[in-house]
Length: 381
Ligand SMILES: [Zn+2]
Picture 1 (cartoon, helix red, strand yellow):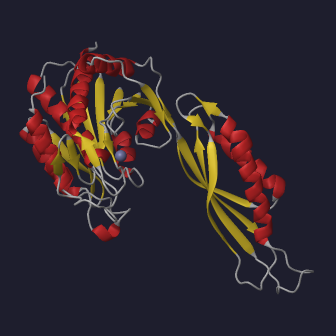
Picture 2: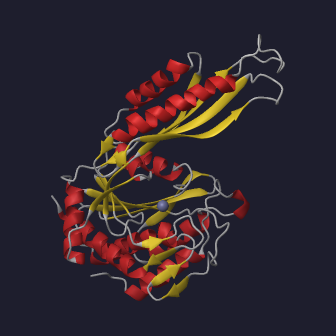
Picture 3: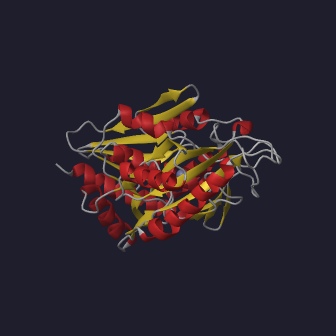
C-alpha cells in the first residue's frame, strides 16, 4: 500500500528529528528556525516526485507547500507544523533520535515530526500511484507553537475542500477543540501616603473584588456550561501586578485573564458576560481584549470525517473514537477559513516535556490511514 517501506519511514523520521527546528520566538537563545528542515523536506519531496517549494511567511520563517494531481475532483490538504518547543530541561539528547523497541525519542518526535513524516510518505505514495482524481496539497507550516503565522498565511493564499491535521492524538479522531481569549483588566485608585486613610484609595482592594467576582463566575456559571467532547467553559487569572511601595496607597493594579471558550459559545456574549461581572464590582475598571483564537469543530457528517472513519476501519479494523480537546491547534485556522478539518495523529508521550517519544507502530498506522482516506476522498466526483 505504501510506496515507502516502514524502514524508510523510520529513516525519514530520524532525519527530521536530527534537524533542530525550535521555534525562534519561543526560545530565541537556541538559535534555530524552520529554514533547514523546510529545505530538507522540499528536497525529499522532489526526490519522491512531489513538486514542492518554500513559501516565506517572514524572513527565515518558511512554510513548505506541495501539490500533486491536476484533476477536477476535490482538493484535500494535509497539514502539520515544522517547529518544536525548546529543549531546556530535557533529559534526553533532543536531536539524536534514539530508537528503543517501538519508541523513537527526541524533541519533536511526537509533536510533531512523526505527523510530518506520515504526511510526506502519503504524498510520495499518491505521487507514485498517480491515479486519483482530485488534488492533494501539503501545508507544512512554521510557528504553530507560538503565533501560528504559518497556518494563517497558508489559508490566506491557498484553498482546499477539506483538511487533515496530524497532531498526536493516539489515532483518535479529533473533531472539536476549545478556543481562548486573553484580556487585561486595570483598576485605578488614588495614590497617597500610607497614613492617609482619608485620601488614599487602593486599586488593589478594588481588584480584589474583581478577583472574587471572576472566581464566582468561573466556578458557578462557566463550569456548569458543559459541551459534549470538550467539557466545561472556564477562566483563570494568570498574572497580577499592582502598587508602588509598602507605604503608599496603590494607584493602579492590573491582571491578565484567560478564558477558554467552547465551540457553541459566541465571542460577543463571552466578552459581554465578563465585562458585566467585572463592572458590577469595579465600575471604572478598564478592560482590553487583546488576543483570541476561535474554537474548532467539524460536523461528523462531513465527507472528510466519514472518509477518515472508513479508513480507520479498514486500516485498524476498528472504529476510531471521536474526541475533543481542551488545547488549541491550527485546525481552528483551517476551520475558520471554512475548510472542514479533522485531526488524527500518532501515539506518544512527553509533548513539551523532558522526555519525548513517539510510538513507531502508530506512525505506520497513521500513514496508512492518511493514504486510504486521501485516496478515497480524492476519487469523489
Ligand atoms: Zn503540535
